[in-house]
Length: 180
Image (cartoon, rainbow, N blue to C red; front, side):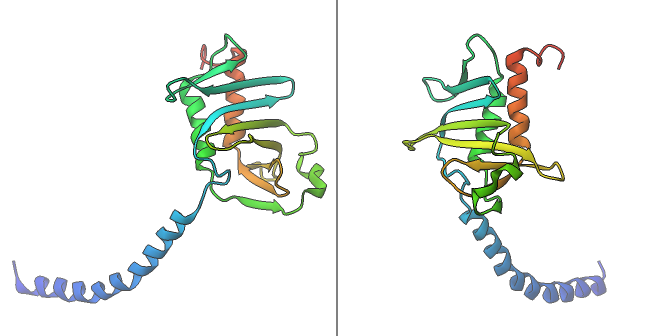
């Protein structure tokens, strides 16, 4: 190897080294901010979820061993384990979201006066269940308006929650699994 490329690489290394240490504190601050975010629902675990869509209701809860979920209502129907787990993980991992309205005086504009669906979450260590009402889609159809019972704010949540709910009702009605 010739000396010229080795000298050039050494000079570049010593020029870039201070830049690396100068930007390192910024990277550490950003990662510590992410760690300080807490769950929107402040749940440590979920024991059961009930979802009401119009006149239909489904409910699933943890099994006795606490490892899996099972559909208990309507009885004799089926929802895949991974779909129930995905819903639970989405709710547990829901981080800070956009607040659309601080005051829930006019919930009709968000479709929350007659919600599309409602979800009741029974959680580990919470004496009262958490109830969430889901309204209409936002104008760009990328999220759905939601409100937690007892909280005057209206939130904008990703459509994954609504999508998972629809899939669950399709499984209960027998419209999934056979031709999917």
